[in-house]
Image (cartoon, rainbow, N blue to C red; front, side, top):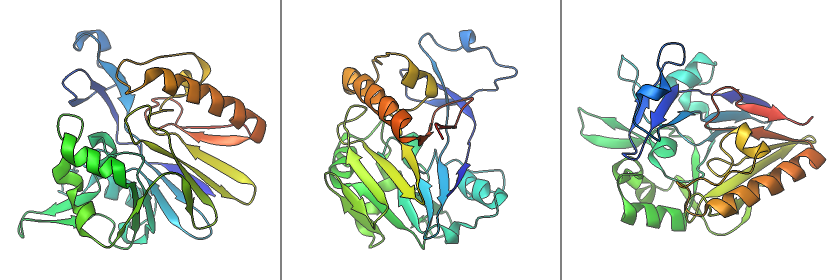
Length: 248
């Protein structure tokens, strides 16, 4: 399997839930509001023998020519948006679901950003996100998921085909889910916002911004120990320095 991080850049986020671009070479975190977190926004594409899989869809920002940044990031890696066959959504917070759809301003209509892909999202997460709304969720960006036959709503734990496993963890938000992709003896784990950064895997850390911070911590410890034994490759959506870490 081939792993390609699709970095959208570094950002700070504070209690307002606004993502503000951060230049790691020039900006000073201390000049940002007290309590600001520094994070990378980093979807991943996984190329397997069967699929081109996108893990979460980023912020949905546009590049100067008006196209989606995630589309441009894919094209920069030789992958066209039409080639994506599966979009796996861990949850629908706006930094993970902004690229679910794109807007045609001339037609004043939203379209699925990856027209040839099946989208997988937990049904309870979708219902919760639609009801909860801002500031953590932006329903206008993903409400199309309830209006298209491209979506497969998951419930509980299960398998997608014979090599992708999903599991509802909650912890970061009530219906957050994680994924394992396994092929030819390689196991990739995407813990999304329950396991967002390498440092959090190595240290006991309870975050106030999590729905259940203690459960997040306990799951990270469990996955890290299991991953070391079973030689997993971890993908870290919010890690500035280490998007991919492998025990292999």
